[in-house]
Image (cartoon, rainbow, N blue to C red; front, side):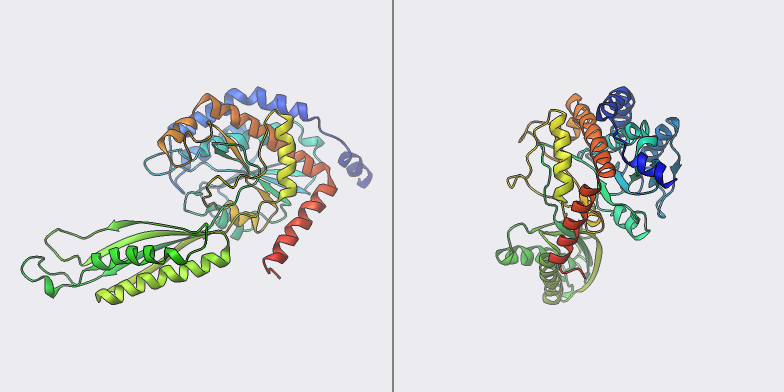
Length: 405
């Protein structure tokens, strides 16, 4: 048996077979992407999207495990002639409030499915395994974090996905992120007859914004703090008894995030103290910064170039957001490349125009290229032990630099 496995491991999958498989699947992948786009579902509510993906996988002969990791809308499918090494391809499919798939997660899902189904055509030739993991709630819910905690990524040697954007970039930073919900409780009174009897929760809420703005002068480049008022009072003629706001705090790395979060918390406490109101602070799910594994990213870049794309390795001019793929990248060698679905500068994620691009012909074309590139890269990882060693060495080096024991 060992000799048989060794012979299998020495086999080489024809990359052109993978490309043709994606082309053959193109009508079904396009239909899936457009269907998910037309029916946007918010974090942890992606029941239709996850079901449609699972149904397509099962129609193609794949066995789908769902729910997964305690999440109703997460799933996993596996192929391969042997259990290890294992490469994970990740699918996202949640949408944003009001603006739907303005982050292009419908294309992320269809691209991941396309890569997996193309690889399933050569499953018996793969010297390892490929898993497709459906990861809900990237938009603020941290679905990948929950799957990490549930052990879903144990035994995975490489994880990959792609993200629609306005340009092709192999490796781009993602900011470490934490969210806060601040609720202020004051004392109500008649706003005209006896305002002096009240203590305004709204004043404390607004003062928190002003204090944070005043502290921006001491923040490093790359820090982002943005908030909204979610409760501004109960009636215009009442000194507000209750007010609330939410903030997202982002920083280039985890250490700076901790420093900035301490500032934000002090601002909220200071505003409450100055206004004589009570503060309830809720710290919500946050994401880690992205550790791009350049060894793996460059291999993905080679696949893109073979398919006619010319990606930049990095682009400092591009803005950065946050993603729970960052948390995965701290646990497993990972990549999160960006691929253009529109011309640079025309629109960007979380805009209505970008949602339109996510259902465009160019968006579909890019999704198919991504599927081919991910399939090619997965085979590269499985067939090349030297590549896996280099990926692991780079990953350990990043941990050592971060002080991980």
